[in-house]
Image (cartoon, rainbow, N blue to C red; front, side, top):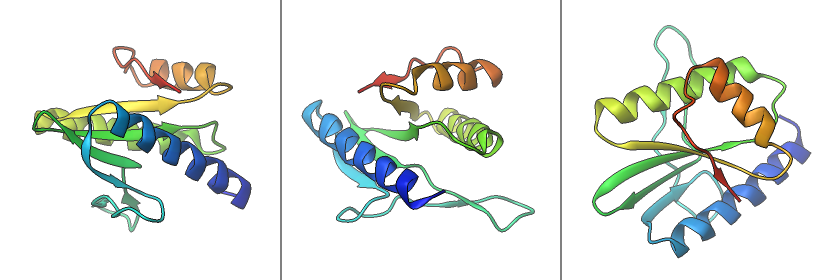
Length: 124
């Protein structure tokens, strides 16, 4: 990821955190400066880690949020989403995707590719 992508991602994460706080989420952990970093999960067989962009609690239920921006490595993003969706369903938690203008079609295509069409992205 380039520095420009990272800056755009950080801005969207901050905007998302503000949106989540306004809609009643609490104990928010985010992968940006000023917030506690969410727990990372180690992928078996490799040294790569999977970290959700935002983790928050609402009404006693944990939610994982991931930011969807156009990516040069869509395969990694797909595997991350499938993993987060699976782990959230195993634990009776929730997984949501947050996207913004200019990334809607990319997000919809990605969700369709991995059969997560039941996920409706949060559009900021």
